Amino acid sequence: MNRSISIGKTAILLTTLSEQELKLLSPTLDNVKFCIGQVGSMNMQKVISAVETAARRNELIHSGLYRETHALYHAIMEGMEGVTRGHLAIGDMSRTVGLRFAVVRGKPFTNEGEGEWIAVAFYGTIGAPIKGSEHETVGLGINHI
Image (cartoon, rainbow, N blue to C red; front, side, top):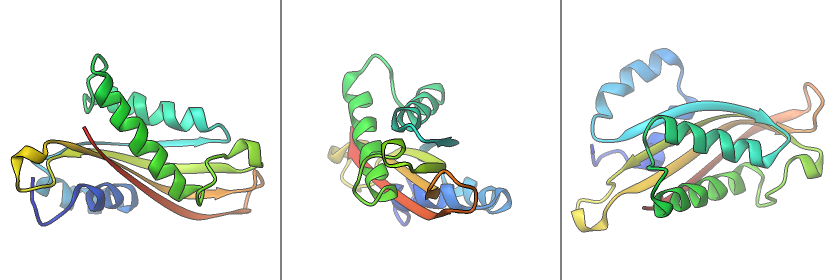
């Protein structure tokens, strides 16, 4: 992994850059695995499922290894705490989200013994389920695998 850019910063960049900007960044990401997706919902479980499904389909986690699924889950929840400002609820509070997300897996430390880590970033909107009543939001979660 290019040690001058962290997995968290990489995840945030992947959620916010345009397609053209992503083309410029992609060649520098040769030592990490990542995927990008989108989800919009008033249901927290749909957000979690969208990220987990993308991570599995893109082989960022191994479904048969509980520790990998567990690490991803905690990174998702930590990221969603940022999105929801610490109140891990959306539909229950009449809030909806429209989010772009990125999952990045890599070795952010020079000491190989630190192993692999996973970062999940969200960028998008949150607000009342009324068009035009939303505002920008961002969240980042990082966990060791």
